[in-house]
Image 1 (cartoon, rainbow, N blue to C red):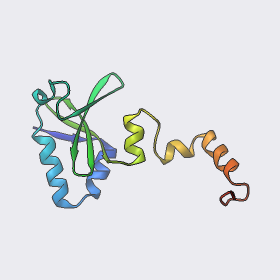
Image 2: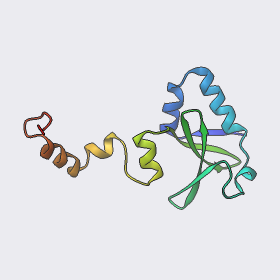
Image 3: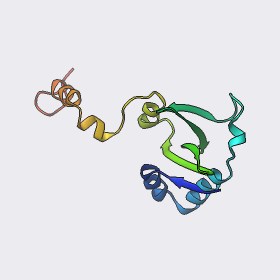
Length: 121
């Protein structure tokens, strides 16, 4: 089975140790669509932009993927118990780019500290 990766998941994959990379690709390559027909099985399901993304755990990693063109496409590789994973599961915007490009982000930063440092309590 062919396994493909989004640009973001490929960047995370490349940062992993080689043995973990091989295990991750092997895990995704062994998945079959039939495993996901039972609701409430060992895999999580998230609906985004009109399609289902499945989640499988591998140690501290959460792999979000879909089935496409006879293979598996890995959309996201996130670390469990991180803010980014929480935001993704809760459909909240996440990531440094989202925050830095938001006027609300800068307003909160300016209100929090008048002189660039933390506000005294």
